Length: 433
Image (tube, rainbow, N blue to C red; front, side, top):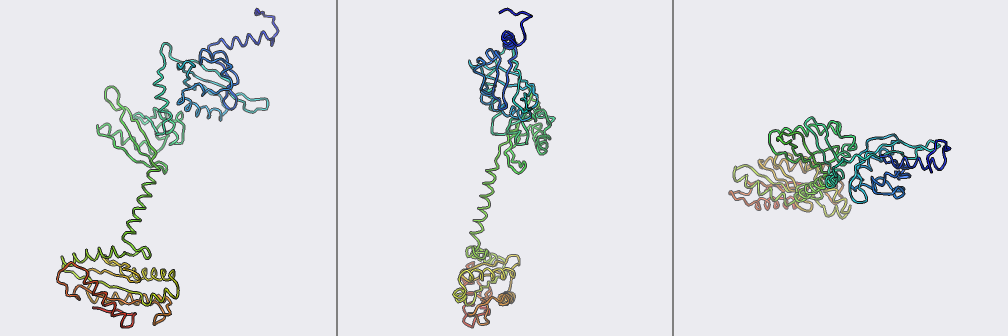
């Protein structure tokens, strides 16, 4: 039907003519709903995408993009949808039905229904594929890998301007990649500029840049920097890769805590937290060697809780454990000289190793300890004064006629004999060899 000026407006002829114009202009005209699905496509979808308009409707723009590009553009378009504002210059790469690549520049305006509710976007796509140059699919694939890599990747120039970052890097800084590109590194995160300045100094000096572990907002990252040089070998910037190792660091910290706990348990009594028999024996050997080498004094005191079996029978084992902890704490307060070591020797027995102290000093400490435990006034019906008491045996190297041997067994045997005599003499007393 010929186009005539007097054809009434709104007739089927006008509709066909308008559609013919839309289909034949160079730009692709489209509409999407509020979910981002096409509700209209002009005929330019044929040369641009190799798709009929009816095959485009109902699909999303991301269905025509390579996977990595789709991820990148989807994040950006989600922000555009949320803002419900006009946009322009959204560059995106699309894959035609024959596998070739076309580069499009998208612009659009928001559309609202009769009630003022956001209904979607109406816009155009323009082909900006370089003429006469087939886009390198491998380059697009590499860019998609860069954009979607789980490791934070970025590049900065010498002025600390961000040349490129991927989404993982942007998320680390609480931004999007589009927002950060071209910004100062300080705008990404205040810790990063100082870090990069240090790396640039190393690069300028021709020194290797070591990997670093850095803490950013409570998370740990393994940071690897590489110098970027121009064709003349001049350092013009840095590339950076930051891998989140927070999980590994937490595991390392947990393992370190567990190892310290194991080390502590290996040398300490589980009930009283004092030195255990293993640590006491090792210290006795060490102090015997020192005494033999220097000719210095060495004393040992062994304490034993009087009538402890009767205490347990009367009050129960839980009360007995608490009694031992209370006694351990009271004794520990008395043996605080450098080099002193107090430990649980077994059962209700405690051993104190006292370097550089003579017979009189050791006896005075033992008596002070006996009085301190009696003063706790822990009820024990079996005890003579009606409370928990201790007996003590005291011995020094001089008491056993030490001849220079490094064997500490005779010293412990002597102090054990002294304790036995204190028990035989009525308990709640000290006895010296």
